[in-house]
Amino acid sequence: MRVEIASDVVCPWCYIGKRRFERAVSSLADEGVTLELQVSYRAFLLDPTAPLDSPLPVREAYAKRFGGEQRADEILANVTKVAAEEGIGFAMHKAIRANTTRAHRLLKIVARHGDEALENPQSAGSQKGFDNLQSRVNESIMRAYFIDGVDISRVDTLVECAARAGFSHPTLGEQLSSDVPDEPSLRWVTDDLAWVAAHDITAVPTFVINDSFAVPGAQDSTTFVRLLKRLAAS
Image (cartoon, rainbow, N blue to C red; front, top):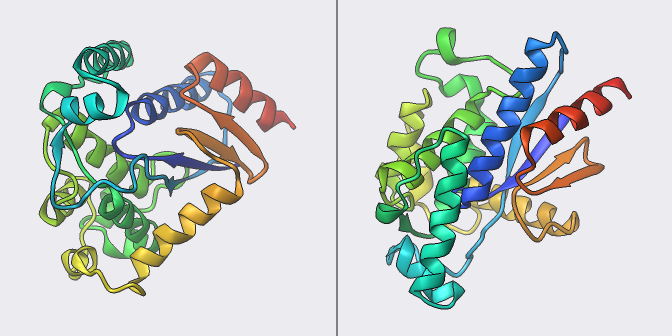
């Protein structure tokens, strides 16, 4: 079963949806339901106009986008509460909203290079399915943004996020720093954005299964369990 998740690393519901999907897969495994999953992430830019060099505190960015500080505080309080219910400790008061293109470029590099660039391929290497290297790097980036409050548009931050998840590459910093239009990781993100548009995806997270069945939103784990069971049996 191929699951492609359209997601942005600064989307709180993407982090929540990721955790709920993980819980559903673990729950099915506990029931003895075997799923052959191939999970990958597709780039989606919540704010493609966000500058790379001028990050804002997330509260300020939300206030500008959603109509004032009061509304921003309400939104942030709500997602923080929901995240806590999923075991994620958001620290939105120190989150820094920035352009996520470089973060998506990192995720595409990880997906393309895979095991060949692992620091420790024996321990973290060749797992397939949901718990794969790209998923771990994605988790590392989200943790940096939502919990650690660091600027994930910075190349050094992203290299550190990758290393923390077990991925390194000798030219990773150089690749992420390059603004050459035909730089491969830029092309891969552009391809993802075209894929997202072709699938009429306008909000994230969206889980596309076998390129034919789309599940929008951060569904609860019970819904994911029912859905995955049905698809596995079909």
